[in-house]
Image (cartoon, rainbow, N blue to C red; front, side, top):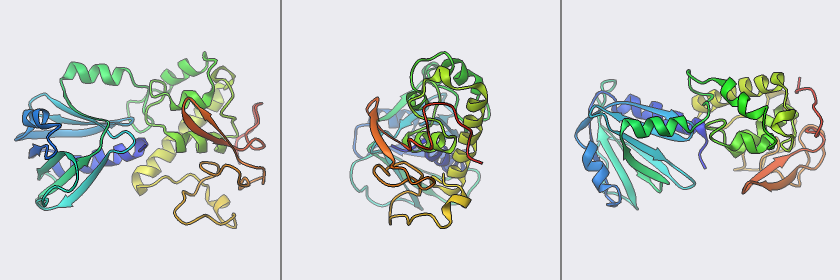
Length: 278
């Protein structure tokens, strides 16, 4: 499932290409035909992301809400797009004020693609925790939930009502980077640890937006490390179950937590509090 940096990157791209101009919206597949008709021919005011949710704001006051889920994807094209390929849920074609060129984008396989009114958008965002990539994010909102909770920090970080936008990769890697066991209860996380985790999430997600990929291994740990398999992410523990830890050599462990795969190093991430990586 795409993590928050992907949605913010898409929001920036769509804002640059379509905002300020009239957008033709259609649903070649037909499943979004009624919704597309409501916004077709209107001006896209802005595109923004909140966690894993993408919102297109139109001058009519309506919003198109997209959640990619496990299989959703946008395909971008310069100029008028050709005949639809596959099950295209939503097609957008237009040229925003920041560009003189016509652009198109096709959305396939999302979990959600729907038109919302402003009160519905307000209710949606109210259910979400602070997003490390948003300027209006308040990390204290998440802390108030975390430090009172008996749930594991691994589960809390994946709860979108606690922190919006963090997915499985960032969850596993940021906890490793700070030597925190994913099984430690939220109430056993100190305020200093939480502030360090939040600051790191902000930086890692910003790097993801800039570079278009997840980058979590520190440069000093990337040189001379065991080889990285072709096509696999460069990570400390994510999807490395049974392999040696890149720092200490202990075997990376795996379990399932709340229906999602969880990876950690038992030596680098002990159950008791420990100092972050230098």
